[in-house]
Length: 394
Image (cartoon, rainbow, N blue to C red; front, side):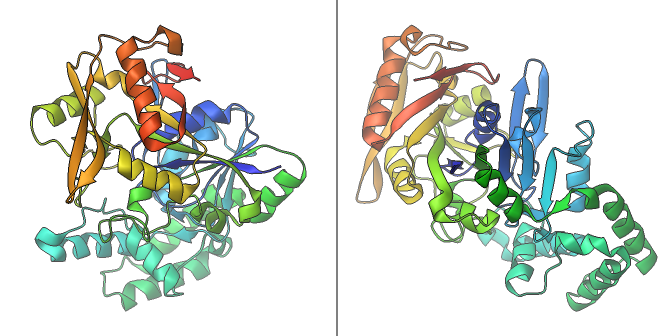
């Protein structure tokens, strides 16, 4: 057996949560491989909305085991808060003993760094992700498995506070926190690499879930306006311990338009009426930050780049229904001297909640088929609404 993979091919917020939730019904294990609670996946089933930041989107499949891999950085308090949305997760959640812990001093350092950068700020979520990954690379980080000795962990945390010159709580307060984390989280601590190896050896179906998107990758994204981890498909191997030979099909997820949170280049961004309209209809507000997302037209050259980089086999195109009622829709088909070259498409009426491709109006079909041609990868899933079942499979 091989593990299948879902990866965002834009700047994140593409709708990976809905895609993984849909696909997870067919899988035995769903594993998250990088990022932290700066990611935000929203899943809507009927009138119930779930906001996931650390727990894999397979948590809504009662039969799936969810894995937080070694490549993820974890805020214990945020994870506990997220777990409290659900009934007892014992037997349904495994957390890597090698995943690194985000502490309050990481958050303080993150916010101070952004403030010091002034108008050159990256626009991070301020969740402490970057400083935590920096400690990991500097070999001074704290790992999830250290929860096994809460008292020792408390003194290690105090030592880190003193080294980074961030005002520290008392040792009694820190010990109280580490004991609470141990009580709530230690039962989920595991060698997740071994668990995934065994799952594949036993013929179980495994789905790997990324956070953020390709264009935020620390190596291949729009540096320095990127996240602090490898968001591309190759990062799944590092963040879980699976080899490249154990990766099966790769699904890329993209919106029918582009959005971005924070600073950085965005060639197809629309600052006027079109961008405002997309933002309003698409409810483009960050799940984690609550910040309005920057909005613009679909960028086919960047999608082609991301598909090549990730080895994408097929694409899930999300939020096509946001264009309901648009007279004209533009797509960047190429660049000339660094500027987008747009192709114009005729809009359509209402496609919201359509679940069969042949039922789409000809204009919507033309838009999908044209994107497929420009990207060079098959579009196998089309989302026509927020609900799990407002989906077309081709």
